[in-house]
Length: 257
Image 1 (cartoon, rainbow, N blue to C red):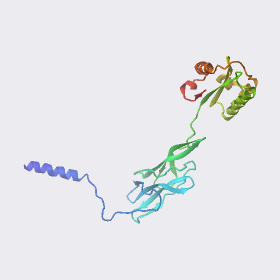
Image 2: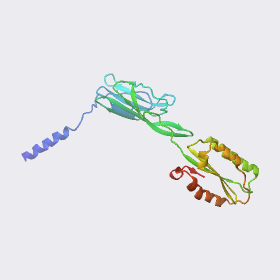
Image 3: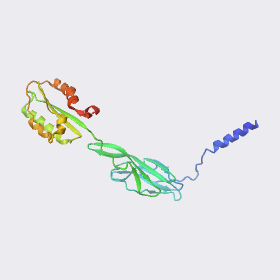
Image 4: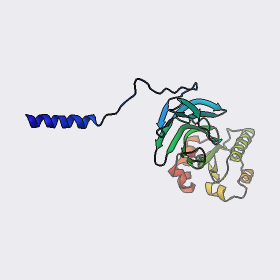
């Protein structure tokens, strides 16, 4: 029985040593009248903590802030460093983590608004701060580039007798306008015309190799005749791309007819 009590006491002492103490009588209280203050907290060293305020609006297109809060004075002051202009509304301080020996702080914002043409993407940006204020490191080190969008576009125009000469010229003008808006090599074009006949005016390879691809539109003449629309669409899809298309037409969804 005596041995059993000794083992129990040793076990109780071991479990107690794994605990920690909280000062519930005189806790340190930090307060700042900014939006989102206290969303994240990181213990930087024994004398102060860093508090994130990811919803704070500090300037135009700049959202999120960091505060250094000292235990001895129970006050907080902003952590100042130059946020790059591309960090639009990044919600700085949404994520915080700290390390010691040496003291470092990693502060991140995952809502950087990155505009690419007509689309807006959300990306992340992090800053690694040392024991002093700037300089700091940023991750990624350079602004993110817009994603490349390769497109192969086939124009299949109706040149049958059911289309007036005026409307046919309007279609050619539309083709020209679209071709002017996209640039090689990211976009390649091919032009095909149908009636009861089927004619390829230029392929992707012809477009790429041409010094002035738009000049190929000058030789396009209306075929006339009957309208075999379904046959033309099927032929464009099943024949054109495998025979004259680039490899990327088969490897990505950006092949348009």
